[in-house]
Image (cartoon, rainbow, N blue to C red):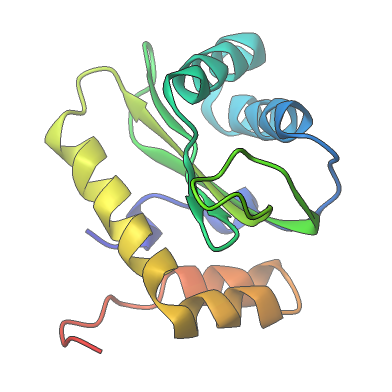
Length: 154
């Protein structure tokens, strides 16, 4: 599974200014609503419910908020690089500056897990993360996100 299957160039936010985790999720829910046609409030509430189960802040400045939504037709990703890192209750306590939201249809099952695994693989690669932080604009970030996955171990 390639990230180009999950994210469009319009779903990349190169410089998002937010102060809190709630504000971040609200902004990304609004963007997701425009991309999917689903209700912004439903997306926000579902993401917030998932965060209450345990933070999706993975550490090292990275978070992957995700949820399954009724009425969604396909898996949708949104990537945001934050202007300033924010507290996200990440496992390592570090603030977050790179966020990849993953929304999946209710019945996505294995596809949802494959997508999460693909995103987490990319965001665990130090070189890829550095490129994302150094990229100047949305098109450069999109290019980094959609580079074909390497099949060899680093």
